Length: 263
Image (cartoon, rainbow, N blue to C red; front, side, top):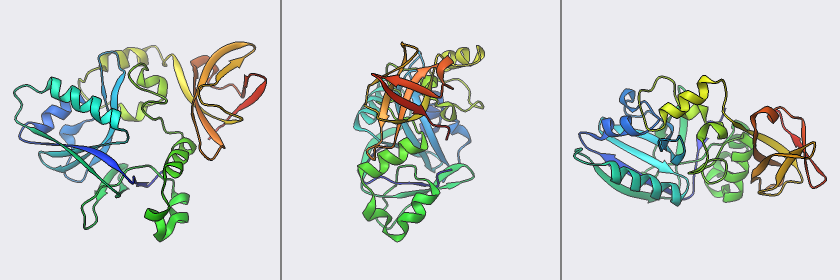
């Protein structure tokens, strides 16, 4: 399991006020009502069709003070605009944040935040062996190539690649961001209906080979999915395929063999 989060540049949305907790509990996929200061998790804001406005890491800083950290500017903008649209008489304030650097260490399966003197937060999953390899030089060695390659090698979905405003989040394998102990939230009915039939329509898998972003994958001449992310290191890629082909050992792309990974 990954143990650190880091990001050179991040976007955040602080939500503070008497109704902040109830507001986030009602709208996000996270059980915010149960959080204590220091708790946090990765969550989603969905539309009624279970497609994502964006994903984020939510941190509880105080009883009625929360920060949502985003990976992309488009996610930040979409979530902020939807929150503003749905904010009526609640007693709360929203403020945009941003910065450089930070670290989140996992605690009891939920990331508790650790701030340096400058108060910056950190954002990006990294595996234990990569963290050990970085050692004390962690901040100096990180780059987009590092973070994007690590995400793909860990099999982590990304908004704008594996999921987004046109993709059901279950198709991207985001089961861990849809906790079963949560009450109502936008998109819940579609999520539960999909799960009630046993599985979603598609699945995210990890593959390797001569992969190209957007390349169609086929089995016996039939298109069954496509490549959604390719590691800058050129080793692994992620793909979304029809559910019945999720266990296929290999796929074809214009005569090239793309092999499914079992990580």
